[in-house]
Image (tube, rainbow, N blue to C red; front, side, top):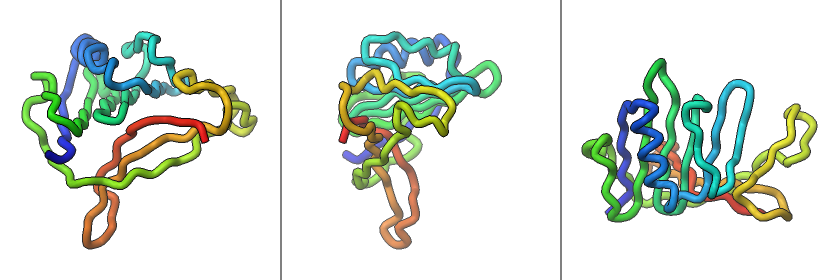
Length: 154
């Protein structure tokens, strides 16, 4: 079927409801604001109103958002036959198969970032990696789109 991309402007309440509904299929999250970065465990509720930007992701979906004034610009990516919430309408793009890549994240105790990071959704041991699916133009190899699919140690 291909990877479908949806875009919507949502209120905080809409985004919170959608994130809660999608959370069982998306065990990983990244929450970001000017003064903080958090990688919450799977069982931790996402306090979306406290974070300006975020990602909720798993192998079959990614929900990313960024606050723009009083609303949130949300991009939802689905890879299976799961339907998007009604707030998203029709997909704006259907992408072909992508390639999976892994990127090392900052070390938890790296002093150069000025704070300790804790990757709470991962078991201890080994360096944390972000797993990313990249979609490239078949002719130019230009990166067209990417989505986070998971995190692991390695």
